[in-house]
Length: 508
Image 1 (cartoon, rainbow, N blue to C red):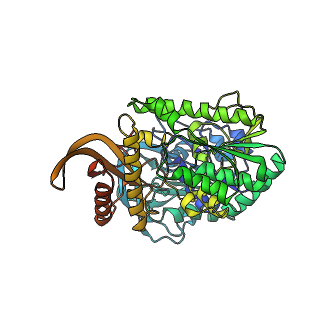
Image 2 (image 1 turned 90 degrees about the horizontal axis):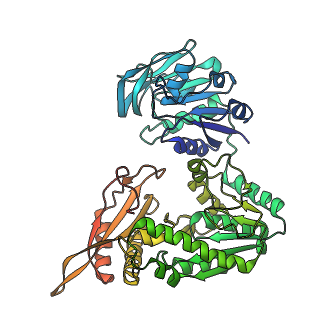
Image 3 (image 1 turned 120 degrees about the horizontal axis):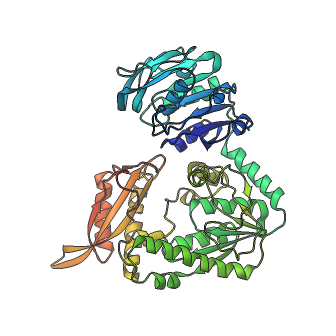
């Protein structure tokens, strides 16, 4: 399988670069700059992309790499810090000055393979204080801005390319085309990475690995665990047992929907545990969000453990790990099945031999595509991201049955209005939050003293940064009127217009 290495020097866009490569139907791996030269040499990479980074290449604690990287004969593209690193390492000069931030006009040499099919004048996204003052021997300048004399450079004979700007972000309109040019024109990739081929190959690999042995899956009802469960079921059929712990903190009717889908549609051996009372009793009077998370996590383990004991020994335990989990936790190289003896804090007393992680190589958008390849309903595949502790962290303050019911109804109405407006696929995440604030309202001929519900919606490509969604006023108006009229105990609706950063997407 052809693949591109994304060598991470600490930049915030490492995952986004890898996703852009995969959107070009070529597999990409993100590995830290501490990866050995031997591993890179033996990795079979068609190309290497050097990411941005937070430091200067000439600083005392700079993230550098051995010059041997540039002697492997592999095409390399340096982005931002990666461009400066390339220049600094092989004979150029990087200096402080000529800072640029935001959208900038860019003049390019369209004769370069990197800029093939791109007009001589375009726009790019800059974010730098240092700049390349002198290019290395054998290079030529192929792009510039008013303030940056070396916005891009190339060495055709060595297949080295460097750009000071960020082609991976949407603010560089033709950045995707530039990355496509590097991947195909320079690296010579064929584009064989598709979710159709991945799905078929993964099912066959799972069949061969597992055979007729028993598999246990902790099913949360979210996209990742649901797609993993269906993949396993396609491979091993009735040898898969799923445990679904309903802690009562899911969105309205979601527990019922999970049971109907996996039992009714897929005929999967599903053990559904209604543990709402158990979780609610543990959460009574708890307001601190971190305590909520800890209680829910520990209680989930206890419930799962009790059900797993009834099943007895299993050979494999399914985990819905996806590639961002691997990158962010520093777990190491992705693989279809990895031997462990614990997962996400699950107790050692659950008796299994290996963990199965069928989605370990995939980003979230790829997981969704696999779900569609498996014929899963779009309502499940495009289900909104949901925190592990569920609505517990969308209720500010302590949790009561009244508050939980109120939030479920308000959240359902908001999501329903967004879907009816046909903008649900345009928004990265949208949900309701029950604040702990009550205010005076006028309902009919009397006054009320009821809760305020906050609506939150963001647009994002990677969830590392996000902008508040510009939902049409008529949609917000309809959602507000319905919530106030249909949900008893609410008399005020506010809309959160804070981006990330400085805010997070969730409120707690």
